[in-house]
Image 1 (cartoon, rainbow, N blue to C red):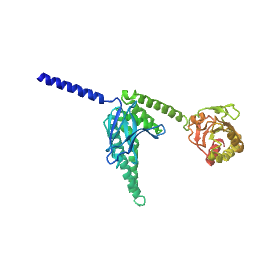
Image 2 (cartoon, rainbow, N blue to C red; image 1 turned 135 degrees about the vertical axis):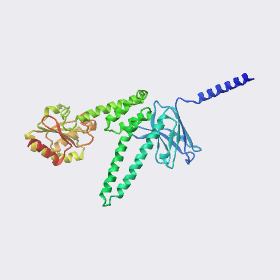
Image 3 (cartoon, rainbow, N blue to C red; image 1 turned 30 degrees about the vertical axis):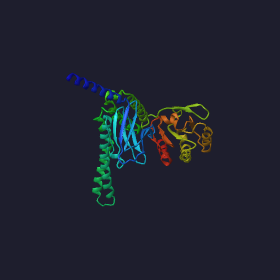
Image 4 (cartoon, one colour; image 1 turned 180 degrees about the vertical axis):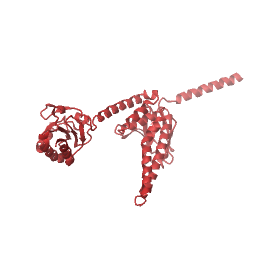
Length: 381
């Protein structure tokens, strides 16, 4: 009899194991609750593209205050959950595991995501960051209240506290990363910091290096590492554009198609002037540049203008040169802001200028109007 009972129990356990195996998925399952959200409301699972715009990856329908997503991702990544007619969204680390979401439509920041290590880290990070934001908001209110006060000592003290909490906010991500190197959320955090064009490259590089090996070697880790290397090269290039550095040489076609090298036309003072025929501020500045050139060319001033005119608009470029009487050296690849010289000199807007001395060192940047004339006079008089 006992042997029969044991056999029955064994079969039952095997059946349960089979059922569990059948229910288990190699993708993600997101079980959501949405108290107070009406039946039929749509829930969106979104991912950010390269421009940080959120695009829906999947849609679910709320029924009896619950919803569910199922799918598969190649690697854990930060996505977002939103509900129709509810402002805001809930960040979620989507990975091929079971994840529980409690969507709070009244106070969306009070929504919770649990079930995986990465989401626990995300929750921990968000809570710490929100505490600092609340602290800053409170101090900002105190500071605003003192604006009309004659108590300058109190205002200065509050201003100091505001500066301190701002410093805490800026360093918070890196402090978090130092103590959370074993989660994919940290990799996602590093990726998001990189996308914001940071200046704290060394801190990011150090944080990535300290991540667990399996995270760094994952497909996502390899992508982030490639972005790190690209940023490193960019930073090295930007360092070459600092005042005191020798300006990078370049070669580009003139209006006749001849290749002109900046190095070969450099004078005792040289202005590299980035402009375009379509640029109103550039055209308004041109008369001043003409005046400076006519006044100082005989004393050793050279100008090389790099046009960011668009493809197919060579005639516009040439007409602007003639109309504005720009009688110096001109080059352009007619490729807008993707011009190789513009990229080399990190040109984000125009007009933009670099002023070089006789040795080709950068002595000033972004000078216009009287400031430009004064600097050239200082160099050549």
